[in-house]
Length: 186
Image (cartoon, rainbow, N blue to C red; front, top):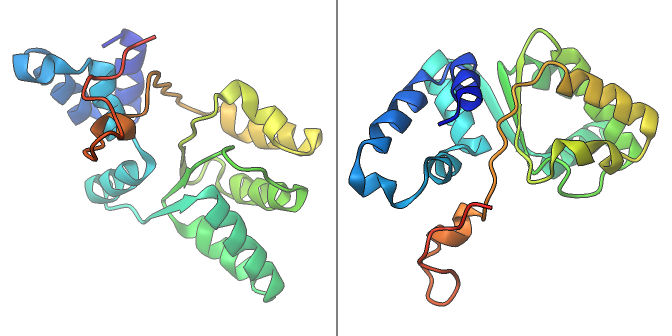
């Protein structure tokens, strides 16, 4: 494991993950996959939400970003958006999955900015994305909103970038749907 990854995992309070990574590096049976591939098996937004909730007794909410945008829009239609926003802000950890995977509207971007702004410095946020951070600005439809959203995210973030093929593909057990060879590291 490289030093930067180790440091980020410690900063996130995931010392047990570092210890397990070290243990597996010494286990011949565990070395069929690289350390990064094994980490990719465990680092997903739902797993992070469950782990942080259990470890720290945090109130955690997991959303796929399209689901969050839909709930926000429905709350606006029903006139309950401010109440809904207060509820979202109460979660100790908000996990957003599928970030930048689907198109987003200007209205959804504004709501997202409000959510992020209300959490800044007070509550934790975890974002999972298959899209590199460098492409997030162009994903957002309004450049001014994009600047504001990324300013709240990027400058206060711990980033863990995982490369390689999807572990879902590798772990798929259905015949003919995936290879039995571990994904190669590029």
